[in-house]
Image (cartoon, rainbow, N blue to C red; front, side, top):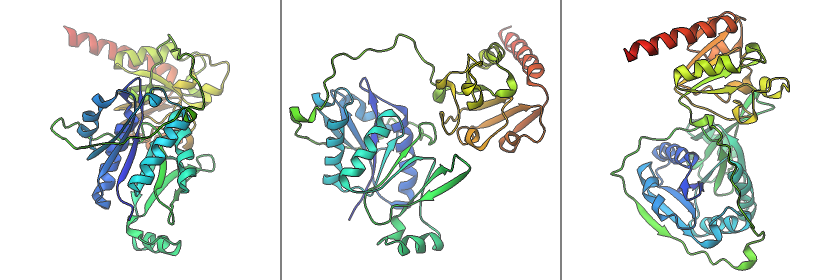
Length: 351
């Protein structure tokens, strides 16, 4: 019988990425209902030093595949390694981050092990209600109580669809970075290390990496920010300096809605700053929405923020329905005043 919740942990330059730790945290919550162990699958070259971190964030066991063939991400050897993990351990659930790597790797693994895949999920839970269990049974699920319900936006984000994979295992999904929450780090936690030897051959390396060149420009990852000051169409095309000044006083970063990113005249709004269904999913301590109407596609990317404050001159703007505090007014007048007040507050703290 299939057993275990497996997380394919992404690493870059030998360092585990946050999306893997977020998924391990979500797996520990699924574990409470399913009762299975949480396995972290770590692939790379010379990365055993990252294993303890996976235990600290909730993994019960770590499957380590360490090989020169896995030094850099290449589709074929990574697909072969994860496929062997599936064939050897027969997991119940397998989760990937919906990063550039996860979106490339997950469908190939699903195809080889002949199972389904739900992409860009925003919610995961086990079937519990009588109706859900009956639906699973009606669709051929032999053990409905071990069925994973996977929720994702559909029809351009206008509704949320819950999908299931009742007849094949593992139940697979990719999850966008920033959607799930890490559990608190516990450095006393330990686990079991399983080293898996995958027999790679030169034929598995179907591409040759001549040189890996890193961009000199350091890009800010808004998914890591604790505070985001986010601008929408209502903030104006020249809003960056205003947003940046406020973000600096709050110790945060600037982000944007899709309306700004798509507006070619709004030069400050870059793709990597976009929040929403087609952008990035964020979960900051504070999300300050400035001139953002609150379309469902945008809300899908920020609704899990701890505190949402919205400034909008339209008192019926949908953004207010997901805000903890709403300010009705012209953001171009309100935000500078807020920045001035914050600057004074910060200066008084230093006295």
